[in-house]
Length: 193
Image (tube, rainbow, N blue to C red):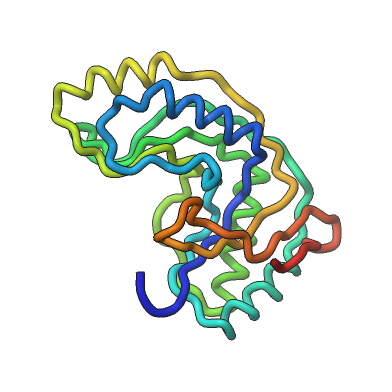
């Protein structure tokens, strides 16, 4: 990544939840993925923004503070993949697409659009990325199926805020919180870091 810093908006996860999914990663660490998500970077993406100028960032933060939402709880837990089943590019934990999460996603999408960001054309599939970049052969697919069948179990995630993150691609952890927007009846309250 070059030029302007890259950002995204996400639901942050508690350390307890991140530690749980870090243990899941340890159970499946022999799967042939090139890149494993650092436990501190785990989150549920709401909107990837890409490169953002300082002026546009300030306008977005101002607009995100106007979003009103009440806290809610999600369920997560099943191991799934994105991409070609023969070479599944992303390994992730699926997250329930509840009415509340859909409403929050739509509000963030609208706020971003109003500030000048592009509309997301892909279907929103909430998830927590565990690993990326499959480097295995087809003989690993049975092992992956076993993992998906055996590493299950729902976990509850309380959503009381959403966060604007900046990406630092050469650091670990690579995501830094820029602003946090808390649940509130009349609009999101929050802070800028």
